[in-house]
Amino acid sequence: MKISIVNLSKFSKINRIVKFSFKRETLSFKKLSNAVIVLSQMVLKRPKIHGYPFIVKIEPTNRCNLRCKECYSNDFENPFPKGFMPVELFRKIIDEMGPYLFVIKLYLWGEPLLNKDIYEMISYARKKNVSISLSSNFHLLDNESADKMVKSGLNHLIVAIDGLTQEIYEKNRIGGNLNRVISNLQLLIDKRKELKSSTPFIEWQYVITKWNEYQINDAEILAKKMGVDKITFIPDGYDTNALNEENKKKYAFLKRKPKQPCYWLWCMSTIQWNGTIIPCCYLQDSYAFSFGNVSEKSFKKIWNDVSYVSARKSFTNKNRNISAGEKGFSVPSVKEWEAYRKNSNLTDTMCHICNYYQVL
Image (cartoon, rainbow, N blue to C red):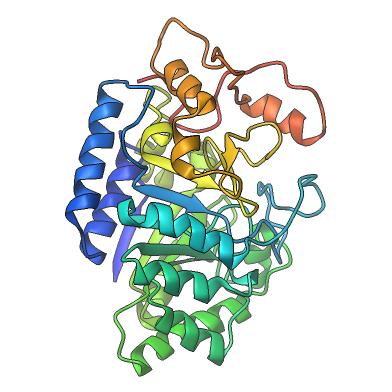
């Protein structure tokens, strides 16, 4: 079993994703040449891209069975329309983009397993030689669905478990049942063994908080005992101040590094359940941040349309405000985003949402 700590060094996220897809996916000349072309154009700061993104996030649904803190899918606070991506729309996306994709991250704001067509989606993408990564709270599994998950060809499964007692677990995963998740995880591990399959690669993701950090060592022991392939620890919000003195030193390198460039606009894309394309995974308002809809036009046309081109120009010119595009491309600061969620008006259009908001 592997034990890892999230590293936010420059381009670490994209490096991990590409490294994963190289190991677990049959590569093609078309995919490799596309990636080289796209990365070259990012380095050259080209606003128009000849090629496709090689990583895409697709949202099966924005509905969820839990009410986790800090999650925008919380049904009690989220004012945005909810629904499920039709399998026909998913096929349309894969038919166009599949030949260029290394990996699809089949999750966003919501619980993917709520979509009744999720295993059909995975199987379809795998037949197109695209790796699939899925993240779940893992409450929705039985023997039949465990069988479907393994046979679907899913490459990578992330299961979120942030504590080893119900009291600690539900501090973040509100409405969740720890025993059910552990039982479901063991069921899948046993099913994978029964079917003599090497996939999915199972990763236990543990968000560290001041409430659960004393259970870290026990989580490692349990993960190994169960047969989990990897356990990953992520400090809550990358805020090392929430940890005790010993763990502050251990996770010191996780402090924010705000001068890292944003690669999303060149290498990745995000598609919501209704087909709306948004600039990154942190922005879920289809009306305020839509770059186009793949149910209405091809992805290629949207990829080099005015919104994307404007956004790329804004992220490559250090003398311009990040929102200063031809067609009003803008994303809010964290403070203003919170205000926006409460139906307030946005006033600050600078992008301070994640570690990658700086220009290239």
